[in-house]
Length: 425
Image 1 (cartoon, rainbow, N blue to C red):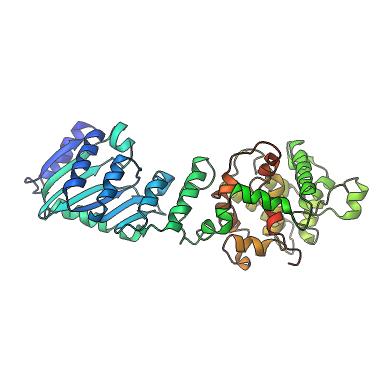
Image 2 (cartoon, rainbow, N blue to C red):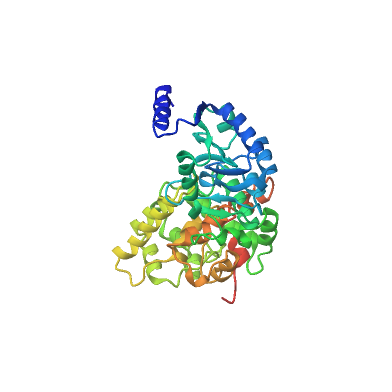
């Protein structure tokens, strides 16, 4: 903030009949020093900031939590410490906030005692940077609590009521898992809170809380098929993808194997009977899909090619894949447009580290593990219902293990089929 701009701002404030107020400009270090004094001296604390940290000033703030009248930290962008969020559990008049349109971005600090008031308004968040090393500019205002400026600040603070939520253990745990995933550049840009419709329940589900140790142990049991043979099948399919530049470069038989439409007699004739290509979702019963695969449809090939081989798969990649996948059926005048079983079969085979083939044999158990009704699953909500909670989970975000489990980690999402497959479904 340029000094000329600051002087103009201060003149405007005093021109509003606020000449009885003391006004000063603070940098980051001075803002921290003043906040320490205000937290100690004043009876009522009102704060609304975009981001917060869990440092020494947070310790002082929490020591004075009985003075809280409305203390709110934003969660947009995962810039607020999950340790601070956890400290707010059960604290009266302590909240978090997340905006869905834009971001929650105020920096307002208001302190009241008797007829006195002091406020800090400016650029500094309640963070290490905002209160120490950053180049910040804040206006410190002192005066009578009934002054117009303090009334305006109080009205502004009240306007955030619609965004505030109390912090529960469930919310704090879910935020921490998502925060950890975001730090590894996996998952979404903003947290999803437990009460949100798109994925909120899934983020507090049993699968979203599972550890890598438990996942690996359960995957290896594989009561219906053979764990080692499953791994060999995925290894062979990954070899096929790595051998070509485009999906269209593979043979029709290889397409069928990857898509789960390769019949027994055909795989015997092609010398491919070493694998059961129907594992992870047999799709031969979907005639329209099988026909497109048999013809090596260009739109299907384009859809598969828009999913990167190694880079992280984004929601935008997934949505473009879905658009092209559906277009293949529409352009072919198919009786039935492909849905999540056929679409996610191809996804899981190309990127077993990111997708699971959701189908009739695992949908019920998968839905139970992710807290949604199986009848509500569709390709349109597959990312929110399945991928979002998976990408926040401890087992998904565990570091790549050394030794024999390294390959299981590479295929971990597709291998959810071993946990949730139901022979009788």
